[in-house]
Length: 331
Image (cartoon, rainbow, N blue to C red; front, side, top):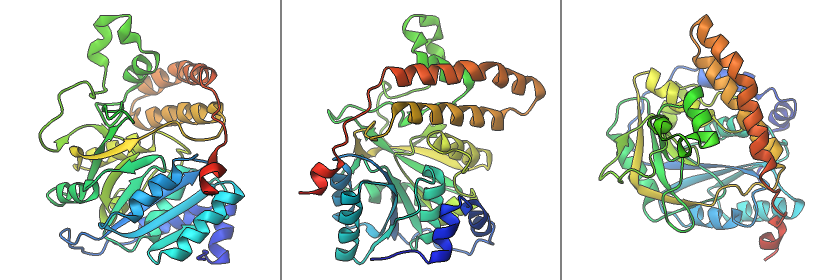
């Protein structure tokens, strides 16, 4: 079983990882060869549910994966043990446990610092890789200038395209219209709809403003160039922010129509209130980062209660999922 040194575990427990992250991401970037195609998959686990080991097995069976890093932010004791057993069975799996829930972005940054391969694939634990997905993402990224982020096409379990894999610019207005589905009642607002899953599927990778963090690829070099995820986002919106910063640096964000994953979504066995509140807070933080004038900051300040209120209302309509993690783990 692989554990981090006690000193790093203490940093994690004290929520001080941001300091070590800053040191890592501010180091001078060494030259690298974009044509080298070794891939590290980084997966953040937190009470995911029965689909977790289906997702893990897809990664283990993918010939493109040279290293598989699992950051366990929280699981039942049964799942924790099964993850340790899995790590012992596979030499290329690195498991990090025992640090508690440090948030998605911080855990993902930790995975990036531990990666040994030139390409990073961030994959949700409820996403099932489809054949050749990783190879297609790497090939698309190799032809692009720095920094480059390539997102996969997310599919629902019925294989229809999932909402969120290709989006336009995320702003306070587009967010409220999207969260409240206002364009359904006011057709004149349809022009502000940023989700593109109803548009024809492009023939080749295309630039978009925003892709989904459920499955995307970047080189380790580019992820460091972007300074990783902003760890002030605890859960949700960190992917939107990363795409925005990549585009601000003159980079490219691509949606790949033929690199596919089946994404179950909404599998976390935690209170919906926790998830939606963190998403609402993340949106507010993101809009404040983008507000570059006093008037825009006042605009965000005025909308903050509305954004948080809608988040709470969404939480009230969702039931907490039954904890079935141990059902599959015990098989």
